[in-house]
Image 1: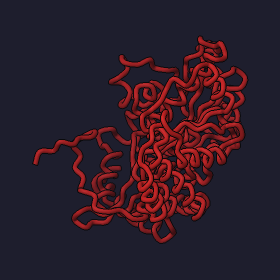
Image 2 (image 1 turned 45 degrees about the vertical axis):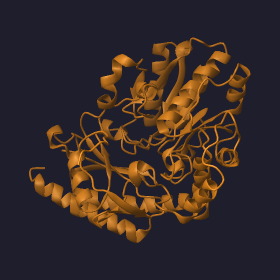
Image 3 (image 1 turned 60 degrees about the vertical axis):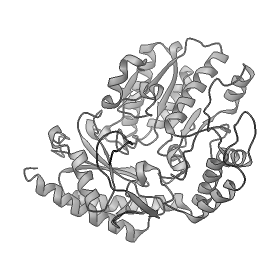
Image 4 (image 1 turned 120 degrees about the vertical axis):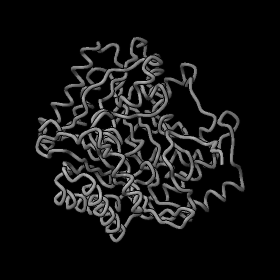
Length: 442
């Protein structure tokens, strides 16, 4: 049979039959544990009956209403609901279909706001290396992950980068506030190097996602970043595409440090995989200034889609009804214990990190020197394949800018329970045994 569909590669995968809770089945009847919630998306688990019922109810009313022609009750209700969860002042919501769109929207809002303030010279958006902020050209320009961005470098204007605060690789104590200041002050140095009047914004994931493998910032880092942005009139964008929605044990990841940004990009767990859904959340004064100046020059066809917003509203209601944020915190501690126990048994595991159910472990050739495994082992893909064969889905990337290093995200749905964590741990143990048997010299 001719295959007309294609994605990134020829990697063969079975046909999906059904999914429920943390489990998925292929058409041959094999069961898989969704140990990464897809790509850290299915926060509340699969096939939640209350979300499906809300979607059916909305489908009986309307599935599409173009935002320039109609307001819709689901979009208005979801915007009000999400603005009630944001820091004070961030109460204006612009809906999108995914994370890359949310980031692009934040970049465009930042730029248009600067124009309203008579600061046309501000256009540079500083980000970190490594980092990942999306697949569109604008988001790639602020991404620090060479394999994904390098082919397109001639097509876009690459933006300035500062090092991500990887204290564990640099031999620094992440719990020491001096470490946080060390990394955060690199932002000030970069602003001064670029020229403060040209810097528009700084974008950061409160807890690192795929590019750094659940990297938690060192003590004081997030607070100092906020201070520096305020000092130089630079807008602070929090990329909460992966951390938002409760996965870290708080609804927004930045709540762990009590720091408020100027703009938030939100997606993935926001719609929890039921529909394509995301949002850009902005300060009210920024939005009013842009609207007064003639309007927000931006938009997507499916922004505020009523079916998507009805699903998103039901997702938020399920998160609250089941206290899934609290469960993510508790189960995250329990899963961390299991990953650390795995680390004790396998010296090749050099680090375990994360918050809540955004967790990762990293393989290293030497735990003391932090030397990565040989690149040609392709450990980041091989261990994923072994786990998949054993019925566990995990997510991997190369830790060090996409060129070397191997980390694995273990991020089951926030509805996971202790017995299911035991299942995950057992399959991880079995998969590590097989990986080590294939590589006896490690």
